[in-house]
Every structure is written in C-alpha cells, then in structure tokens.
Image (tube, rainbow, N blue to C red; front, side, top):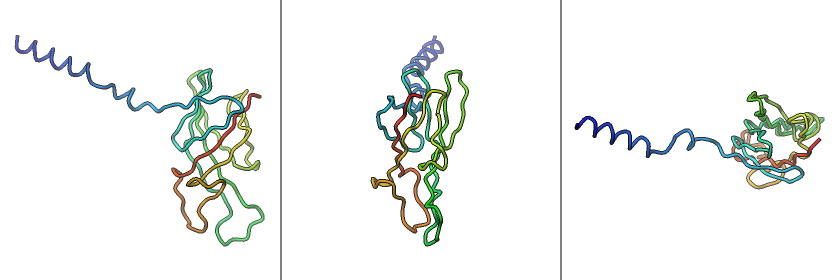
Length: 145
C-alpha cells in the first residue's frame, strides 16, 4: 500500500510539473505584409498561414576599417525557412541589392531590409574589429508577390 501511495504521489508531482518542451519553444512574432517589423538573431517570424522563418546569423561584410574599397559592403542575414510540409531551407539576404533580397517563399519577398546596431540606424562599430551580432536588430518589410 505504501508503494502504491508513493507511486501515486510521484505521478502527481510529474503531471503537475511544467512541460519543458512547451517552456523552451521559441516565440513566433506574427507579421503582416507591407508592415515593418524587427527581429534579432534567434527570433522567429510567422505568417498567418503558418509558414515561418528564423534569423540564424547576421554577418558583417563591410569594407574593413582603414581600407580603401570600391564598394562599402553590406550586412548579410542568414535565415532558416520552415515550410508547411515540414522541410527547412536556408537563405542569405544582403542589406544591399548585391545579394538580392529574393523570395523567402514562392509568394513572399523581403521588400526592405535595414538594421540597427545598439539603436543606431545602419551603422556598425567603427574600427573596433568585432561586433556582437546579438546587438543587431534587423528591420524587415515583407511583400506578397
């Protein structure tokens, strides 16, 4: 009888505990077409039909400090796309048109891509040699193609 009560108590404790899967699931920001929204590395955006994408990396490809360059360079964002069929794809998008903004999904395009670093528009640390990609916020506008 003591064993039965002990097992019941353990079962009750386990069932009352928080579900770690639900607790660790990332939040998905609902976004709409032609409306600006912001994301950071690790954050996800969801369309109304259930498709989503996540910013997995931002990379500084600007002209190196104190160098003379023909082109200023750009910030590159890598996203992971979750399709409705359960498959995933990766896509790189540049803050200039040298890496075309392209289509995230067949009918969805990033029409505008800008960024903030510590709250300053379109600037990264000058000559510091490093930056923290977690301090970069990308600003996006999606359009329906």
